[in-house]
Structure formats: structure tokens, C-alpha cells
Length: 380
Image (cartoon, rainbow, N blue to C red):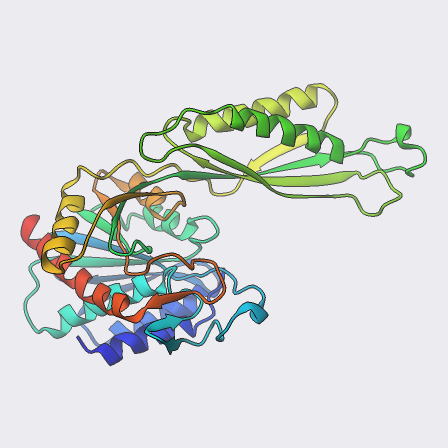
């Protein structure tokens, strides 16, 4: 492995500002890396400036999927950053930049592993399909598109490069982002009886939803408890008017004990009850995701643990995640196993001064290559 090339690829990816958008710039860069190799490259457009990228290497044998997302979250207040977020900086063995952990290090390490395999000059006994997706941070809709268009249906297994610090995440919670809008009648605040305050039904909804979700106390043996947060609320136009519009949003992290469909029904029942009392509420959802079923007993999970333990002499545990990933979309493509395995520790995701340890990143480049080789042998 050429360490300088590996670090340059990650640094170049971090320099691309793909915060919640502009993923085509990442796709352009990766396309250029692979253009002189015997691979098949496809751009799958989600929206202008937002291209998923699919790269397939190898001509026969077991097909392993590598999954990484091209987008990152916003850098936020730049004053909180010690180094420029879209300029990779290496200091004290750490590489800083937005996406260094979540998850351009995982994506870059997968790309480096593929390039090294191609550079080996050896005939490959299997295939790899890289699925680089858009919009993971805001709803996994790039992965949903790739699933819908059939890019995952023939995989024998899939590795998602989200940060796990070389542990193997075998399950994670689902997510429901919901929005409730409220309509009222605007009048002067000195005569509120002539209008209808749009905020008050939202307050009632928030309390009922919070109480109901808090009553769901049963725990999944691996994922633990369902969680619920009212995360945004806004309404009205000025202080001396009765508000005629308001909205709130909430975030729920679900487990198999309280599946998504049950939660939808419960929230919609609250809305219906309040509307029967005179409210004008509507509820909608933004790219909800189901939990990832436990993959601990799959052949891929066991194989990955063996590679990490035996070939790299690293401790490795099966873990569970609280945050959703593209896995929630890919499980709908078939019955193949999915694991989450990445080089970053994940301790600075979505934070200022996000980083990945340089040694961990470089190790990840080698790990993905070794795991692909073992996968091809075991799945023949």
C-alpha cells in the first residue's frame, strides 16, 4: 500500500464540501481515480449535482458490496474549529476535517483497498461493488434509490464503512423523523376568542406524544430502549397576533420491540383525537428507517471478526448502534448479510474538530483488502 496515496485520497475527499449536498463532486473525484482501470463505473443521479456512484471490479466469483456515503453534515460555526473543516490537517497522529470520521475515512479506505487489489496485477477470484451514496445524513435516500434500481439485489454480502473502530456493528436502531403542522385563525391578540391559536394543539400533541413514548419501557435485549425527542417547534408571526400556523418536529429511535408501524399508528391516533376536538393538525414523515436486524450469527460477521482478530491482532466485539445507517435501506434488497465496520472511532462525529487517527485509517485500507480476499475464498 502506498501510504502517501492513501492519505492524499482521504485529504482530497475532505477538501470537497459535500455538506448535505454537492455529492457529484465526490463522484467526479472517485470516477477519476478509477478511470484507467478495468472497472465498470455508473453514475446514478438523484438530483442535479447529486450523483450516487457505483464501481464494479472483477469479472466472476462472489460479489461483495462496499458501502459509503459521499455527504457529510454541515461544519456549523467555523469559530469552533481548530483547523479548517474542509482542509485536511494532520497533527499528533490525527487527521482533522469534516467527514474524517463520518465517514470519508471509511469510504476512502474502501477505495484504496480496491485500487490496491487492481494494482496487484493478479486475477481476482471475486468481485467488489462500491456503492457510494448521496443523502445518508438527511435520510438515506441515495441508498434507497440504489436499492430501488437493483444495484444491491445480487450481493452476497455488504460491508458499510461507518465508524466502528474495528468492532463489528451487527444491529442498530431505526429512526422516525416526523413533522406536525397546525393551522389556526389569525386575529389581534386583544380578541383571541375570535381566532384559533395554532400553537396550543401542538403543545397538546407534544405532551401526549412524549407521555406515550415514555410509557414504552420494554427494552430490546441488544438495542435497549426506544427514545423520543421533540426537536423543533416554531409558529406565529409576531407577539401581538394569534398565530395561524405552527409546526414541530420530533425524532424517534425505534427497536424491534416497538416497530415503526406501531409508532406511526400511535402518533396518527393522537393527531386524530386532537382534530376531533377542533385542532387542524397534519403529520408527515421524512425518510423513516427500520432497525437493522441482528447480524451476529451471519457468516459475514463471523468472518470479519476472524480477520480483525487473527490477521490484524486487534480486539473485536459485536456491537449495537443507536444511529441509523444506509443498512436500513439495503436490507430491503435481499437476504444477504450486512455488517458495519469502519476504521474511525466515531467519537467526534458531527462535532467540530472531527478526526480519524492516521494509523487507524491506514489499517482500514489494509483490512478491507484482506477481508475481501477472505470473503472470496469462503464464499466460493
